[in-house]
Image (cartoon, rainbow, N blue to C red; front, side, top):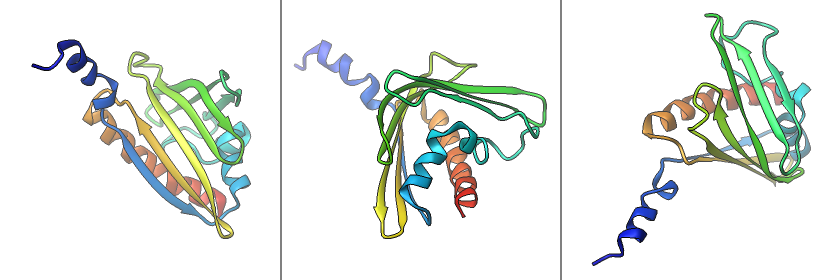
Length: 156
């Protein structure tokens, strides 16, 4: 018979839904990294398509243990805010940070962005894990795909 405490541990974070997306951007690795690491650049591409102009704000302390907060107001008037803590920062190579919406702080997940040069372009591997459930994973996947389109336009 299996060890019951081991079986309980196996049903935790390791079994939560995750997603991995890979995109190639026609921009230098430094430019792609800066788009994620500098608040004045992030606000130029981040956020859903239907937000009130001028409401997207980003506060970022990009260092291990540093916090970030990104907020915006939807056209409907709904306020959204996401934030977390940087767990790994390797300039022009990797960012890892916790991710939690202010409306559901108990649903913290983890984002890892890895950048690799691909000729004059940059290959971005994006991994988001430890989603609360499959619905949260699917909603985030739709959002991230839309955001990567915005990032591509910003970097062009």
